[in-house]
Length: 108
Length: 108
View: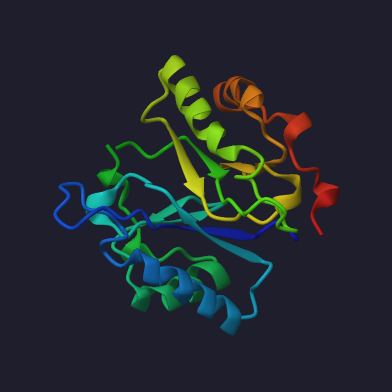
């Protein structure tokens, strides 16, 4: 396999409904994974982009959380409808999607 | 939470014994996670370093696979006994552990 150009990490941790921390899984993050795969297939990016599921990434209340490396862009509140934009703007054009990124001032 | 300085990603995918692809879980990668946490505690790095479990990262036959970002160092064949060295040399001193890194020529 080639070394991936981008690595997209999707938190799929799921806690039961009503858990005070919430979870990305509860917010539907499991649906993001096939959405990313469908976009990869459409853009013929298999082998260039790695998409993996992750245990808890931390910012549960503002999930679903997605992190993209190597640049280390953290996305919050990601919905399946956002995936095409992340793939087009960030992965294909190298421009992280600002409206979805966790702002610097939110990091404690 | 602060933005993590390093993100350590451990593949914990487990396939049944005898599966032709093998898996990191079958090679004991689940033990790496508490080993990283113990080293983080020892070095008081909680909140600075993020350690997460991952679905399949790809290089199953040479697992257990661990990836460290932001530098994107991929480690192969990682054993619990290697974790202290990765934490000391790479995470604390900023020098990736060459003997464990997947060599550039192994990327297809």
